[in-house]
Image (cartoon, rainbow, N blue to C red):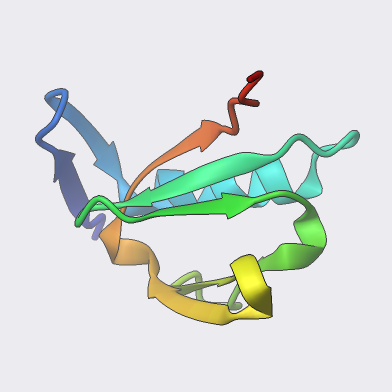
Length: 90
């Protein structure tokens, strides 16, 4: 059974399993390209390098090391989107 989450901000429908595979693809990419995981509550977690994130074997939890070297454990069911990290040029 697929669990479905709705991204109400833009009307997209996505499946959590597809998002997990997207994250795994980003983590395995060579060369690695930084990306952002956005949660359904609006929080955003930047992944500047593959060594800063992991997914457990079951695909139910996503781990990311954020600023100040603080680790966060997130439920993959609550991930709304995965996007490339846009560099800010100030």
